[in-house]
Length: 202
Image (cartoon, rainbow, N blue to C red; front, side, top):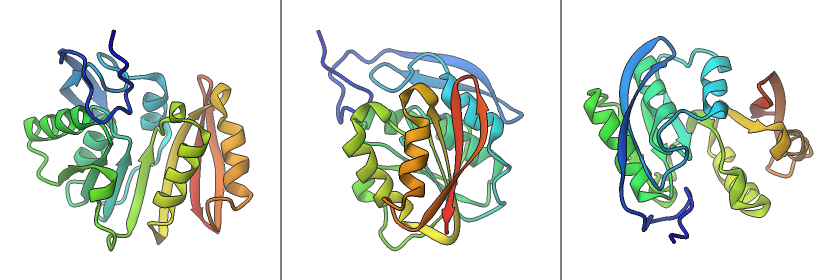
């Protein structure tokens, strides 16, 4: 039995790909999903809620989908803002390969994928979207958010979706207490058990 998690670097399970048809922010697309990644075979509820409630992104800038999985948020950002540089970030090599494949299929030349350590340090982020990997554990999650929120441009924003039952309110309080830096986390929506959080510099 495989001990794979969606945050495994190199899933050992047999690769099984499936095609799904989605409407991402008004764009009808067919994407591939892969076993050994987050929510293989379907769009998870949290990601669907972030897609529903996050505002229209700017026309350009540098955008990051942190924990991109098979690429639903990355693709949505690439489609909505073709002039932006969109980065899908994940530790899971299979997730990165599937996201890159989906972007190539849709001819999204503005989409890039890489592991967290390969993201350029001198590239401030204008917009970050994330359905963060809560199940990596609180300590790892907090360290991840400290690192990536610090990379926001002065006017940059992060939009996070976290299930209430998995600590959405606790995470908002942690952010507002300054543990990740001088940021303010505002709950903009509650939908289907998920909190949508907007994070900006205070």
